[in-house]
Image 1 (cartoon, rainbow, N blue to C red):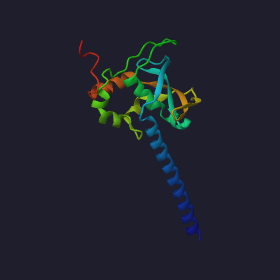
Image 2: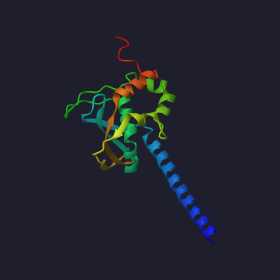
Image 3: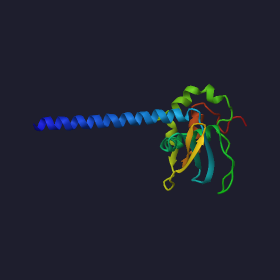
Image 4: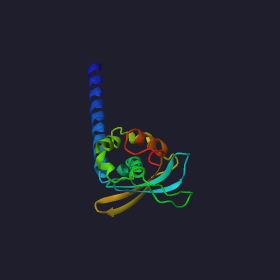
Length: 176
């Protein structure tokens, strides 16, 4: 009798784990789909440690939790391809690390792997700000319902060095 109860409890635990795992997989797929178009905005919010950028990333999604989860990915993408204007809090203009607009297509396989939601390399260059909570704005923009602002720190120096080592961008000392 005790063995049957243990087996039943184990079965229930396995089903619960499978449902949780499936929900996480679906959330990851949803997050990937929402960010395929790279719809986000970035702005400088302050000065971090040397070699880092402290930015607020505004991500869009039909679910606030998905937009929040994609903030790190969008932050790194913004530093690589978009850059941002300077402003208050000691911020200066930041040019995109990739200045050639064709590099994204030329190195598509590299960037697909780099920004993969299941352990892409971009994660090692970014962290959420410990003391900031996401700012959520409910908006209706072409199918999107939430605009979520998250403050993140990007290690732009390490990111630049990694992209140089991969041959994606030229080193600072080349071409002068």
